[in-house]
Structures are given as structure tokens and as C-alpha cells.
Amino acid sequence: MTSFRFELDPKEEAAATFVSETGRDLQQALIDRKQIRKLTQQEMAGTLGVGRSRVNRCFSGFANLSLASLAELCWAMDVKPHIVFEQLLDPKIGNHVPVPAAVVRNIAVGQPTIVAAPANIGSSAYTRSPTSFTSTTTVTVSR
Amino acid sequence: MAHVATTPTTCLIFLLTYMATLDELCQKGALVRIELALSPREFEDRVFYAYPDFRDWLFGPVKKAKPLDRFNLAPRFQAHALLHDFVVGKPLRVGRAFKRMRPHEHDVFELVTPDLRIFGWFPKKDAFIAVAGDFMEKTHGHDLYEGYRNKVVRERERIELDEPKWLLGASEDDVISF
Image (cartoon, each protein chain N blue to C red):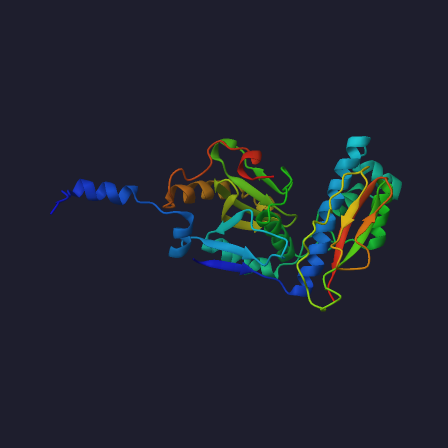
């Protein structure tokens, strides 16, 4: 069969994946937020002191936002972002191992978040955040 | 010994009715299957096929292009992210990441990123055939949507694919699993 592998440089892919996944989660956080109480991008722009088009660009799903900009957008949405660093290496052997437990990433606003990691990797198996408006993004760091 | 009576009409009917599956079309080179490297926890839940011209565009101009908005990832990363989300079965936002082109009766679909537009159709659920792609700026600026929609319809009529060639009358919710 004729197939083509769409590959990126691993370092670039890691960065691009994180940016695009964060962008998607940010979009979802806004959708979830709007279901609680109406909020327009115009209102957010006013809160942030910027133009509406700038806010709109931030929600493209592919905007390479700084952490500070991301935090400001979340603040304007009454959302608190969390970033979780997930170990990919088994501390016993130092190699990548498949992670059997599912990591819950896209959390509905207002629900408690649980990030599950296998007990044999990392120091803590579970991390529970306080019940609040929370959007969770998992950052995978390779060593 | 049995004899099978063959007439020119019988032969013609055989030739007209022999079509091919998607995999056979890939083997012939009429289509290519775009694959991505997946992590151990990811599975290929959907399949992305493409015409050779689309592949050449994806690995040519898209690879080198800069984003229209400098705050965005480069188009190649946008394409990779979109295809990755499609292949591993992630939800695609209807009206944002993908949409059925108007008029709906043609069953032509468009996959969307800030800088890219991909035009094709769904031969079956969770399988997409990309016929053409172009940059948003050019597609919008020169109003090329109708032309691309018509191209998809033409190619779909020509392709020697087993019937039914596409999901007739399917909405966005019908063509991919969520």
C-alpha cells in the first residue's frame, strides 16, 4: 500500500503538540464558561484592556501564547489553568515505558480534576485539584 | 469441462462493474494513506487518505509556509495537529475544525485550520479522502470555495471506488465517531 508518513522534527512536534492541545483546551474552557454565564470576547477584551480581534486571535486553537498571556485570558474567563508534568521515564530503568493509566486532560469547568499516573512512575500516583473552575493541560516533558 | 459463454457485452459489464476498495486504490497509487507517528497510548481510529496532488501540496508548499498571523503555529504544525486529531479519533469541532460545505447536497466536507483549507469527502464513516488543499488567504481572497467543491465532486465521480462511493446525505455527526 502507498502510504506517506507525516513526520515532524521531534522537538518541534513536542512544542507544536503542546501549543495546539493547549489551544484546544482553551477553546473548550471558553465554551464551558459560557454555559455557566454569558461571556463575549468583547467583554473579555474590555476586561483585559485590549482589542477584540486580539482576543479572537488567542482563541484560534494554534496561538503560541506565553504563559502570562494564557493566565490573563483564563483570569478574564474566571478559569484557573493547571499544568501537570508527566514523567515518561521509568525511574528504575531510565527508559520510556508505556503509561497504562488514562490521564484525564480535558476537564469540564467546575468539576474536580484527577490526573492519574501509574504508581510505578513518579512520586505521586494521583493529584487532585480543589473543586473549582479548572482547565487542565498535561505537559509531557521528555528527559 | 464447463464453458463460460462470454460476449463483448458480458466483458463490458464486467469491466464497468469492477471497482476497487480504498486499499486497492492506495496500492495502485491512485490514493495515498497519510500516516502519523502515534504515542503508545494512541490508536488510529480514523483513516486519512489523499490524492497524490494533495500529498505533494502538504509536503511541499505547506511545509515551507509561514502563518498569516505570526502568533499562530506554522501551517505545517497546524496540518499535523489537525491530521493527528483526526486520526486518533479526537473530537473535531463542527463548524470550526470541519464542516459540510454548502450546498449540503454535494456531501463535500472541508477541514479547517487558521491558515489551511482541505477539501474532500467521506467514503465511509471515519475515513476521509482529501482531494485538494489550499491556503486560507488564497481560498478566501479569490473565492475558490466553489471551484474546490466542484473538483471534489468531479474526482469522486471519476474515482474507481466500490459503491457506494460516499456517505450520502450525512451530516458532520454521521461521518466521524466522537
